[in-house]
Image (cartoon, rainbow, N blue to C red; front, side, top):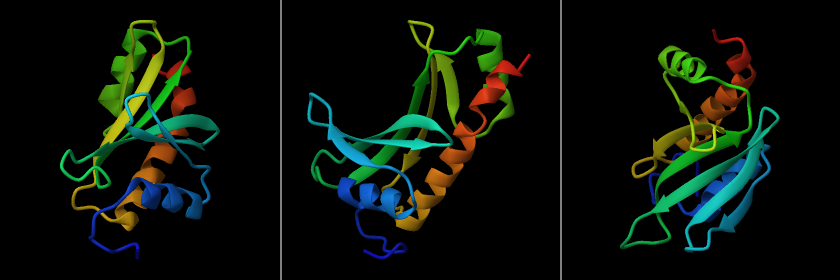
Length: 135
């Protein structure tokens, strides 16, 4: 599949695209059978959760980048982070862990678009340390 190919994208296509771009990528399955990719960027490990079409389970419809960490962050810092950034959303979960997520639609995407999404996510993770600087 070429990078500009508009054909449906599979979990394997995304895994190989990550590896081709120099990222670690391990395709895994959750207990319910849904697929995700373990990877890392900017020194942080993250999950890339794949959402497939119900009627075509091998076609990735959308993806969610997800980072979770134990960080000393306040709700005010999270709100400031969200106000100042266009891509990605941050929140504190029930356990007080910092979560940063970003969704991308893949329905009409291609591997070139996916690589752009990965680059944006990498830059976003590169700014995680700024949480301590947000007042």
